[in-house]
Image (cartoon, rainbow, N blue to C red; front, top):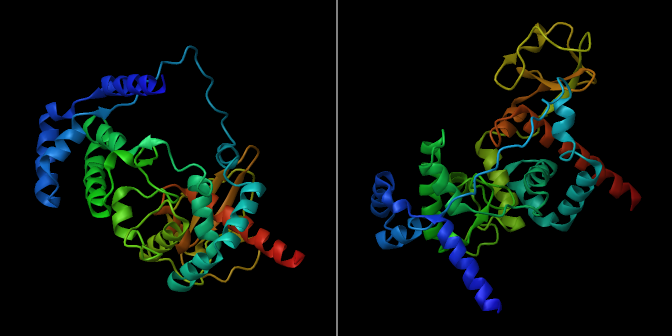
Length: 326
């Protein structure tokens, strides 16, 4: 009976799949990939003949009220930056102390930031994604997606990666956008920054060693400044901040920021950006340093980078607290 159910499930899956080889652009893509990476054309045709597309989402039955005008930061960090996740991050560093120490020694990236990235991306490996990466990338690359060209490039990298690592493309699972592993690297970053920490001849980002070293390598190549700070909260007049552009794309000399001062001494005299966090009753304002910008290279969002920073600081406090208790 179990075999019959599995067979029916497989048939249902195949019925839901679409034959992408009927698309001229896919046939051209197969030709390019086969020629460029020396991947057997028949293998590629077999892959693209059964692409499992996501089921269309039903339209909402009722109109949903728009989110409140303020408090977007409170909503953003509600589950990302918590005391519990910080405790888990400290435990994660202690459990894998050697790789974290090796990564910091080799690349100069503080351990707490490496742990914070993995904590926010996949909750320390609990949620690495349940989507089939090949199907997702194929759908995004050849469907009506506004970034189809980008995803075609990622699909190329993914197929090349699978060949090099001797992996069946259909067996790899990740996020809905094709990100892979504990650190959720897209395929191009997997190839560019992936590190084989245990020297087994393969970069496996589902393993902590390779994932931690790869994140450190990514930050290093995006010019992390060893020994320099990331961000600090600042004072300003009023409850809502306006008048100057905020975000990691706008940089200022500190001496020109009249009326804006760090909450404590901050030994950093290079240009800074202003990061505004919209809270329910007021705007929280921060200085962002060069290393803050480096974190945004991982995810182009000021909120994301600030969440990483704040979680890292919480993890650091938990590590110090646990040391005092010993």
